[in-house]
Amino acid sequence: MTVTEPVAIDTLPFSAADFAALQERYAHTPEGGAALAVLALVAWTQDQPLGEEFLALAAAPECTSAAPGRTSRVLRARERALLRSRLGEYGYLPYAYLLGSTPANRYAMPPLPLRVSARATPSAEAGRVIVLVDCSGAEAPRPVTMTRDEAGLWRARDWSALLAPVQEPERF
Image (tube, rainbow, N blue to C red):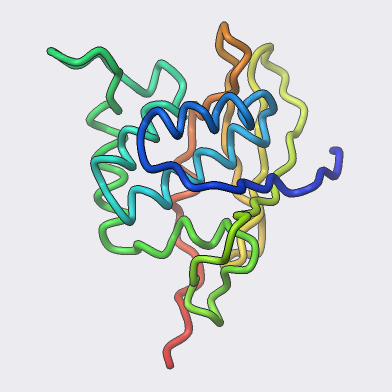
């Protein structure tokens, strides 16, 4: 396993076009693609429809489906239900993956650049990589399965571990 520098995202997206531009900058590595999945989850806690658009862009094709009357793909119902059940109750979850956000500061959003510590591990399957994303609210990093698309961008095939419980924020 190679130690890598954290992925540092220096701007926040406010539209699907902004997020797609970030993908062009960061998703050429599995770690960058995983960091963008984290960013999309953070966005979901602030604006659910926009966060779902970002996640549909960050996700592998098998996690999305065509939507009638839309040119862009949408998350499958299973992924949307998982988001609602986990983030609806524990909105702080995705912040646990941002360096500087901890249970002690109630998973406060750190200032830009947002940094995500992630490292790819070898995979036995061609075209797939498991990325371990460090988490301030858990003892072990969380795995995200990434696949590379035909454009060379890494997309999240399975990010469900990012929605697993973390240590609750401290109460003041």
